[in-house]
Amino acid sequence: MAAEAATKVLIVEDEVHARQGLAELISDWGYRTETARDGAEGYEKVVAWSPEIVITDLKMPRMDGMELLMKLADSELSLAVIVLTAQGSVELAVDAMKLGAYDFLPKPVDAVRLRTILRNAVRQRETEPERAAARRERQQAGSLGAMVGQSPRMREIFALVERIAASNVSVLITGESGTGKELVARTLHELSDRRQRPFVAVNCAAIPETLMESEIFGHEKGAFTGANERRAGCFEMAEGGTLLLDELGEMPIGTQAKLLRVLEERKLRRLGGVAEIAVDVRVLAATNRNPQEAVAMGQLRADLLYRLNVFHVEIPPLRERAEDIPLMVEAMLAEMNARHGRRVAGVAPQALQKLTSYRWPGNARELRNQMERAVILASDGGLIDETHLQTEPARDEATAESPALGEGVHLNVGTTVAEAERRLILKTLESAGGNKTRAAQMLALSLKTLHNKLKEYREQGADRL
View (cartoon, rainbow, N blue to C red):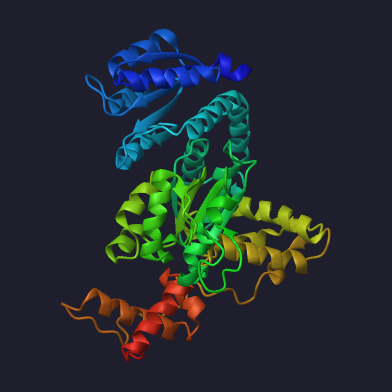
């Protein structure tokens, strides 16, 4: 209670009964409270009273909540802002989060949820000095969580991840397969106040459509054939922590609509259930596809994308940040030595040059596999040399000769996008020697999506070019 008693909370709300009710509720929890009737009076009290936390409505006369938030952001005052939104105003709440709000709550206010947010905000302020010291150490070491890099692109990503980790905002993580999207998600979790709670990662591409809703939202006994007992879904398993929805574009549209409702109301109903269950989960999403293209193709709901894309972390492919490879190799070597009980001393200059000059179509995942193989083959106390590296590495699209699209694929003006896509997919599969996994990687598609496309073409009688 000591932390609460020392914490000052300003409530900015134009509706008198709501303002007084919130002040009484929060005071009962031990916080010191003050109130303001609108944003203009709120800003004056921020300057005069110096609260640590501001709770503000968005719709107010004179100066609304968004204006107040922008004014506070410009002032660089150190405080947490919690915004209150009317039902159906999630777009405004998302905009507020982008401007720096700590969290948002729909009206009518859920007291349990509000108390949790206040406690998290207080905890974040208490640990800020330690966070700042750890941040300086990480910057010098060129690492953040399990992520490693010193290139300008990676430093930008580190700065963004550190800035948004402590909040509860949703984050969309994009990048080619193997770039480390889950590492970013885990780092966001580990740097947050939720780090003592579960981190749950769900690969939407690996779940059959018929089981998707059950996997995510859970089900009651008897909800469908084979549902012999109640089962908690991923949201409930991640309670208090973080949920990563990987390959979001593979989620059925109907399930996406239900997900959007859970994100907005923070409540869910198990499949076959009638009771609503409150959930406190931070949701992150990842995809190796262009999300705007997925929306245009009807594979991703635009409103869901908007809700999840409060912040966007785009991870560059490894070929665009080759200067990070020596540092990554050093970190992977230490990890693999520990994992396999080896004492490999380092990497010979010629081998490091080979690793640095290769373009890594499989990105960091391919580099990790290469390093694990090399550590196992190298001698204890010795160095990894060129003989320990894979003699025939995975095909490098940038340097290996590959057939151009025009070789056997003729596109005329007026060819539909669907037809162009069909021809490109089939030609790429042919180029990959029929290897569907490789073709999916080359096309930046999930294997599930490629299988679905090929099934569709077979049904249309279009197996061949």
